Image 1: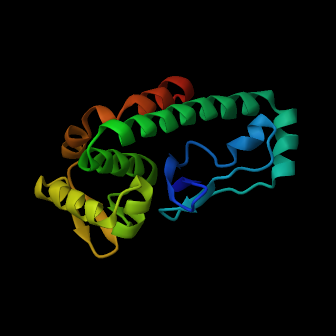
Image 2: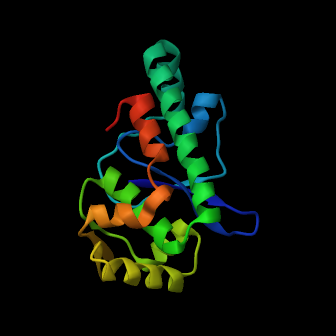
Image 3: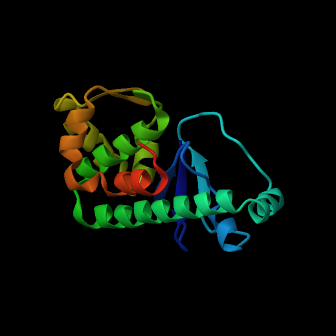
Length: 181
């Protein structure tokens, strides 16, 4: 699972979106742009494919079906980015944390997520103390168990309940547009 991290002119940073096996980083290449102000940060180690930008451009020029698929992925990813903005503006830290853990769980396909409080605070754009409190609340519901350097998902249904309306819109788009369950 890879996080796409946005950076402010003053050095502040927060996660903008999450990429898993369904997608790619470097969406800018699909639009003919050669660089992005964002960085990609591996959150949960996994196998990934890497292709040089020039090679990808050549492959996209030769394969309209691949180009079309990646453009559909870019659209679904844009929905995820917009949903993140909505969530940051209108949902509690606990709801945002539950949403983020669900999204991570969707892509990592494992219950034991190697995530620190510091990393979660960066991903949510909140203070570390807010993450600690939020995790404690989620742990009290039985949704998860925290450990040094990680979070174990115990009850996905409870996380879904806590996340409420903050989770689901991008996931439906990934299914609708790309056929990803």
